[in-house]
Image (cartoon, rainbow, N blue to C red; front, side):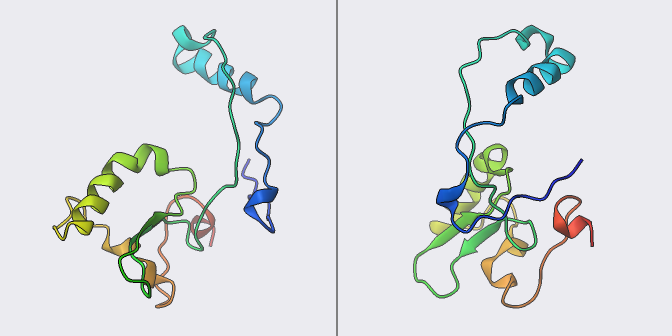
Amino acid sequence: AYQPPEELASRDECRREVDPGYEDSIRRTLRERLPAYADAEWLGGFAGAYDYTPDWNPIVGWAPELENLYLALGWSGHGFKLAPSVGEVAASEILGRVPPIDVSALDPGRFERGQLLRLAYGASARG
């Protein structure tokens, strides 16, 4: 069941250790989906603040009021799997080229303009 992220006064307050039972949870999933890895050596894990924007969509684009600052943040857990594509987009835009993927809807100015996006997950999916 969905549990909203805990509110933190500061990112420095977040836990850095995985939740108790996390390894068991991962191993159960591996047994179902990738049985060959279910008994692999457990090296550990880490935890941190869950980062998301007001509309649960990342910010990708030039900072509105700061010269030469390109932003790619607020991934709410999706950044790792999307990093290769975002890297291509960021590199293209920083070099003044047309990016291979149109991410213009994710520009940082959307919040000031009141143009929050909706997705099939996160807070925007519930309201």
